[in-house]
Length: 124
Image (cartoon, rainbow, N blue to C red; front, top):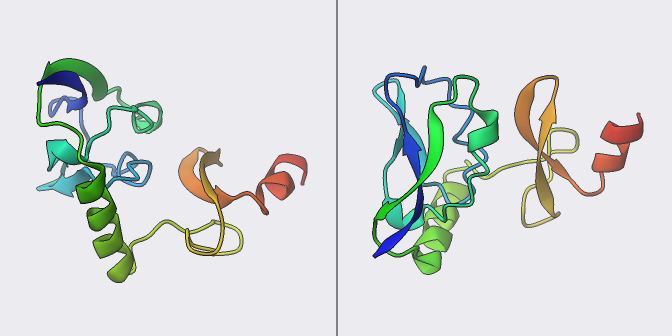
């Protein structure tokens, strides 16, 4: 099946890890100092991770890949939550079970913010 999926250029990747957090499905991880799409069926091709890469190593390409598996993505997210790796609001610490989280840039970093704390970040 041909579909849109994230491609990571290993030569451009510095292994900074900024792309890992925005990948809600958990498809991207750092392996041996480089970002990798470990399980293509977890990549939804939305490209939220692209804008946070400081070197432009991530792109979206259309190619042969397994179909996106939302059930596997949810199971992967649940496993990460069980390990304590779920996203949390940078201000109040709320996780996805307590609040709606949005990806945000704050002081040049990619992070998560809940909808309750977002106005404070915007307006001070």
